[in-house]
Image (cartoon, rainbow, N blue to C red; front, side, top):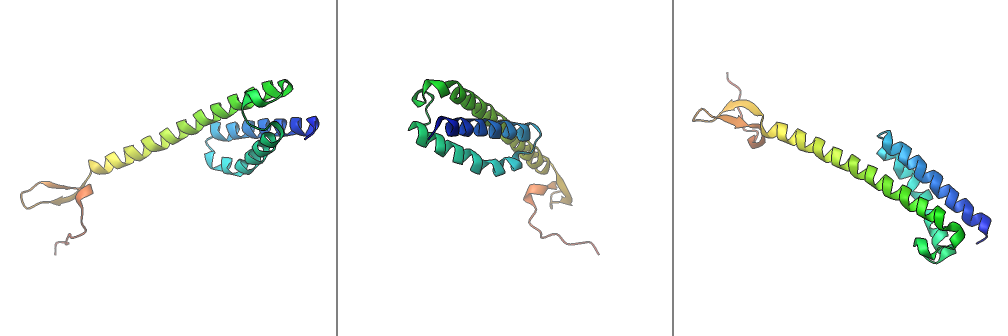
Length: 126
């Protein structure tokens, strides 16, 4: 692979990672799926050119670019993790609201029936 092609792959991968970062910061994590193919293609081309994706395996002329790509990828991974944690917390909050909710029915002893224990066997009063 020529130096120009390698540099084009490196530049393209950096642009893709920058776009991915913009999507993540804008809360559009779903749109990053469209970038996966471009990232994988560039990584395959670079692995073929260098023999490995390790920064040390790249020729000195490209090591700074490779370190920048690794840094950008790590930063994006942190943003992905933050989004994942946010979604997990939102799910937990919704689940805890249901755990503390009651359906408005009572047991034979007068206790309220928790929403989580509903079985669908309630009858309407005539």
